Image (tube, rainbow, N blue to C red; front, side, top):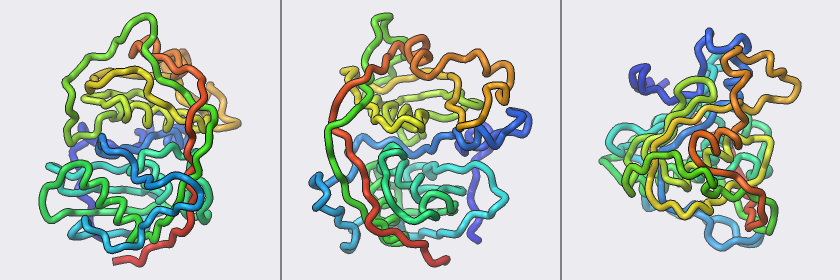
Amino acid sequence: MLALRMNPAPTRYWTSMSSTALPAAAVLITLGSFYAAPSLAQSQTGETGATNPHVQGQRPLLTFEVAAIHPSKPEVNGGGIKPLPNGTGYIVQNMKVKSMMTAIYRIPAGRIQGGPDWFGTAGFDVEAKADRAYGLDELHTMFKNLLADRFGLKFYTETKQGPVYELILDRSGMKMKADGDVGNLNIPIIPNGPAEFVGTKVPISYLCWFLGQQMRSDPRPVIDKTGLTQVYDFRLDFMPELPPGVSIDALPPEMQNRPKIQDALREQLGLRLESGKGPVEDYVIDHVEKPSEN
């Protein structure tokens, strides 16, 4: 198997936990987020509606020069996706195809419908290298083409009005630090411990996607209504969403008194989630297949 180049521990972005972080570490591994390089481009949606499938079968204009894909080893816990330095590709470790789609298209996992069982359960390792440095939008397009070419991914959207969360400024005032108007090649929100995150140069659109990933039992998408146009720095920690049947007592004592994510947003970032109505897209899988190894 092609060896994965890993950064030193201080810059690791994988969603794994140390053995001392939790008595039941496997619980929080299931709560981890998936990370991808930020992109200010819209997802590839084409025309909305059930009769307009995404055209994924045409010859792609942007592809990685080398893309090695292998099934993950069963004993590996956690996983994620991160960019290679200087815009030259991506590294993926132990990630489901559904999760790759969630990260690259920035789609809430609850909005993806259909697909075979393995689509959401089988982990894969990917090392995708470009022939030179590219911009973020181009790298996202390359990875979308990889999903189409190597996994045969085809899907279409169904759009309807439905419940959403609107992200707005809280009356207490914004507590994030503005950090310019342009992001960089780094992953904008990275874990600093179980359900602890550090945001650096975070676009609000990325924060909306991130919040949707954390509230996995709630399929409502998060819509930006803040009016904020810069990128922002912050720290955020909260009570993680626990799987059914798991007691709060399974968490270490220092985590048991944390606020829920909605309260943490108000107290730590000066933002608020309000229920509303808006366009909700479901992404329906037409076709996906396991890739051949290389």
